[in-house]
Length: 311
Image 1 (cartoon, rainbow, N blue to C red):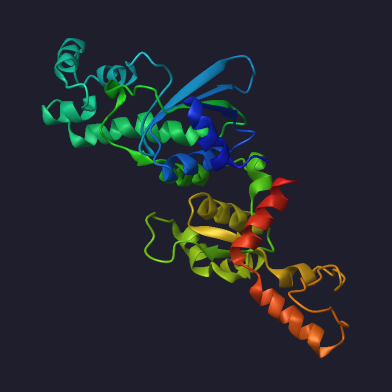
Image 2 (spheres, rainbow, N blue to C red):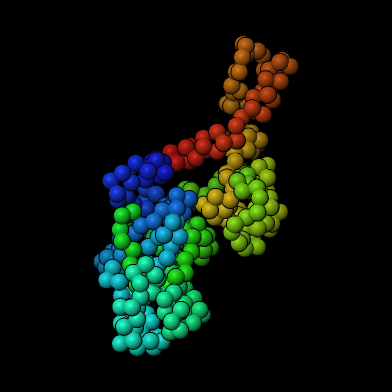
């Protein structure tokens, strides 16, 4: 399985990145774009459920933040939305577009000129970005291309923006069919460990906050489900959201593996030094305890990710 960060960093040398959501999920892609503060045009091409009509969505990003989503590149989508709502006549809007400086979002310019109110900009951003982004997470598959050299049209920008990480959290919250992400969900016998130890930069809903509080590296998802009176599937999905936005990491629990009835000699301790003695000896027991405590959590996290991606 390719490593997204390495793949995209290498591909950026040729200015454009092309792949599919079957290779890299949208949460993985958005996380990379946000954490890398990427600026450019992300284009997704896909087919509708009847496999006949082909569609396209263009996501405009500035420093890892989504500033617009359009279905065409004629620079007229946002302007058409304003005219359709009857907020500004076509003649006046055309005149203001000609007067707007090239580096200023048209929405922000119209607000400063008194043609649009802040609430109207928020309504435009909701329809143009929030609703469109949430729909992208329902795609079964799509080819995507990210062009870091593309020119971003300011006539499609309201002046508002949303981080790609926040978009991921929103999109996954409203997702109903998790079949496509089933193989990426954390294991029920795994625990969660907080990556962000200080103040969170994202607002969590009630269940996400509860799972976050239990992410101490020792409580597995099965136990969380019991404690929070939720199904294991719901807890897995909630945990996946927190993992996707970089708040927690999945941590395997060795105790859980033994509880499944595995023979004790299946997982042998790594010999740090000296010869391995009898399993019944005190020296062997102390060696096992020492080796378990010496395991690096980061190594175990990476190992689990490798094993799951190889399924």
